[in-house]
Picture (cartoon, rainbow, N blue to C red):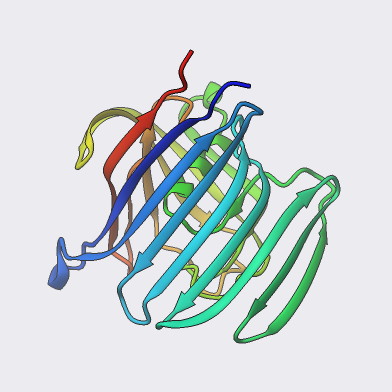
Amino acid sequence: MSPNRILRGSLRYTSRQPERAGEERGREFFTLSQQPDGVDVLLAHCEIDDAPSVTRDVSLALRHADSSPLDCAVRLTVGGEFEGSGWMRFADGYAECETWNRRDGRITQRIDTPKPVRWLQAHPILGDALLMKLYDLAQGPGTVFFEDLFLTSPDHRGATGPMFFVTGFALVYVGEEDISVEAGDFHARHFQVTGTAGNLPEEHPPYDVWCTADDDYLLLRAGAGGYMQTHYELASLEVFEPRT
């Protein structure tokens, strides 16, 4: 069996609020292992400094071709205290979750899924670019609304749960462009996340995402407007190619 191709790096979270412009507000360290069986495994350690602080550790297995989820484990600390942990699995016809969190205690969920689940957002920022594999580039720039997408938390910072929450939102493909980030110069695809299904506790501000214009869909830069005014950027990257 051939070895894995591994992408390893970090993202920097900064603020775009006028009184905090450019201030670092968090960080993310990731390893994306592209395995020979067509599965990608994302390991992400995420830290948000803004009170109440958030520390999140995620192990998420996805099909490389379309980012559809297979299984996931999440552990969450909020405000310096353990918030919850959980395990999720996506099978033919259903999704299941076993979790414990500080607010709700022990929870078992099983949700029927007549159609294959296309996405699980476990809230690492790197995942915001992998999500864009849902958009069919063959149709060119435009907007597509996707239903029945799963989240581990409806909170915009992913600071609750974890547990299943089902929603939908639109993806917009803007086009390709060259951009520069801390980690270097890249040819990128530009996407946006816009209107949601209306069932989130608070509507998410407009969100722009740039990812590499290849099969990796590696996040290069992202930013949310509105009340959030947050910015995310690829700060470092190492790529380990398998030996032939």
